[in-house]
Image (cartoon, rainbow over all chains, first blue to last red):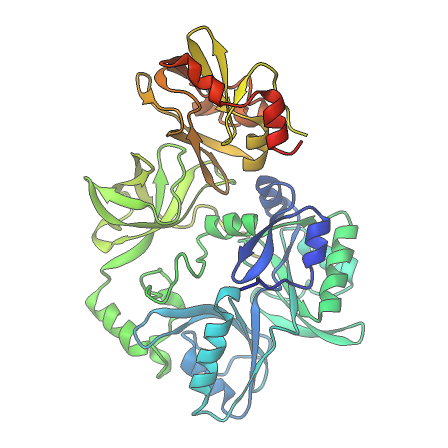
Length: 363
Length: 126
């Protein structure tokens, strides 16, 4: 099947980007160099085309109850403009997808889902919606999205785009009129830095991209550094740390699952897993050497395989070779000595926290 | 435009070997280092390990991927480039000065199956 392209595809090609498939789209992986793009976001400002992300609008009299039924976090009574991170679960507790829920207004919720899961998610949401008085609109084809990330972002968005955002707090959104259309801006991101995400028509997305690049203060950044940035601050990627078979508790994301909020899909399985205790969990591992532990490599203790790497890199910000790995919980204590098999050799390491770099969010 | 050095032998998998007497210095080409991007680790064999033409003997790791190193020649590793342990980025800076392993050749005629500079230049489309 042919991959989809975002509304900025031609601009990526013109910039000489390395293009690779991701989530059913042909996406820019890097423009110049992953390290330079990564550092631009940590130190200044970078822009990502994330138009591949999916958008679903849920409205109607029972929309709040419905979203709370398919979502692990608790959105009940939330103020307008508040954003929640959480997951949709299978009844087994495995993750259908992780997503953001934007409370746009009373009985109006905007769901942002992963590109690779769009078809699965939309079918899932539609199926669950049958018993609720709600309207579900799949809007991925309409929306383009850019993420503008890094410590200089707030000033640049205000000055170059003329969109007031300084007063916005982390994990909030608002609708703004821009050239006659209503766009959505949120103080969110996937890099561990302060920043904003902007959703609008393809024309709006192209205009924002052009204006920000023309300012000379914003670096175009590909999905390559998006992955190194999110990884360093311990953020999960669906397909690596979260799958249909991995539960939020195993992924260390229990704080986004509100077991006391009332019924929701997957609640029973998660409550049972919590009561029984985890058999496996995702941990951080720091290697002593610089060899890079990559997705799928075995983690061993005394020659016995105890799990697999989910994501690993030589951290650009710290220079250390580190990974997240799903391992038997009995070896999950901080400081436990483990090893990762990389090609023919076994490299010693130690269990650490899975945040390898501190986030710099503006609260 | 990638740098290609006259007098070296080149493999399709983008390693080169520089022959000096009974020894060959094996590294990756400028084209290869550019394709890989920032090299962050070079996984090298041990001295006295045997290498075989066409078989992998280690890997070069960039941020985004690990790329196997395929030996263009057969023989015994007599030296590894220890400097790459602390400064793998030397492979990016000058891949021809910063060879990876030095091999005592077991069959000097193997180089005849490799490309010369002109053929390699054509092979990478430059």
